[in-house]
Each structure stands twice: as structure tokens, then as C-alpha cells.
Amino acid sequence: MKNPYVYGYLPLITIILFSLTFGLYTVTESIEVFKSIGVYTGMREFLSEIQLRVFLLIVFALCYFMLFSALKLIGETIHELAMLFFSKDLDGKTVAEARGGNVIFFFGAIASAFGIQSFMLLMVIFLLTVLTYFIYVIYKISNHMTFGSTIGVLIFDILLWSILITLIVYVIYKLYNGILASLPI
Image (tube, rainbow, N blue to C red; front, side, top):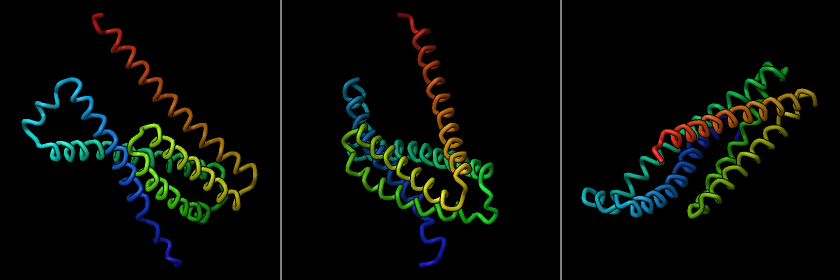
């Protein structure tokens, strides 16, 4: 098919699948935590086992959905900003051609269903999917750009993601240390 909108639904389905797999894992782990701290029996007075699991799945899947949606938005914004700085393509053919990589995320989301029992396996599948997608996009845009522009996009994407991740880790670290310092130990 030559319709450019054939794969338009894949990002939504991908985000839903990743959200469900991460959410299912989190439900299982949170129920174990609830049992260990003694809250589980109190929760079971109000909800049945299935109702509790469905309620937790909806809450956790929604949180993961928001996280993955935000990551997609940030990722596309960073990449298109890099394209603005380094690409000479005025028609948008380069970006449109690289959108076929959404299939990579779709298959990665399907593969994440096999990693529901392990958080590390879920993270490995997610990170491998992101890395594969990134390599695919750089390969696709390199066909329409000079070598210097391709390197510029590559460095810009990596640099901005590194800054963003470092900033988030730093804030979490400072918050964690602040909470520990305020506890009367």
C-alpha cells in the first residue's frame, strides 16, 4: 500500500502494549509489597482479588501510559529539533521515511509480553527496542543527508538525551538524600 497513514495507529498500540506489560509486572510486585506490610488484607475487605488486580492494573497502566507518551513526545521533539538544525530537507521526506520504524517499537512491545515476570527483562527488551529504532532512523536519514549532518543529528540526539537523563537522575538523587536527611534516625 502507498497510503502514508497505514502505520499511524502503531504508536498508540505500542504505548498501550508496553504500558500493559509494565503494569502487569508492577501489579504483581505491588501485591507482594502490600502483603508484606500488612495492607493487603484490609484492601481485600473492600475488593475481591480480581477487582483489586484490575484496579491496580488500570492505575499502573495509566501511569506507564503517561510516562511512555511523554517519552515519545520528548523523543520526537528532540529528533525533529535536530533535523531542523542539520537537515536541508524542506519537504519532510526524510522524517516521513523514518516513520516506518514504528514497526520496530510494535514488535518490541509484543516481545515485552514474554518478559512480564522480570523487570530486568522488560527493561532490556525496551532498551533494545529503542536502540534498534534509533539505529534504523539514523540509517534511514543518512540516505538523504550528508555525513556531517548525520553525525550532527546523532550527536545532538545523544547529547540532549544524556543531559535529560542526567538531570532526572540528579533530581531523584537529591530528593532521596533530602528525604533521608529529614528522617529522625
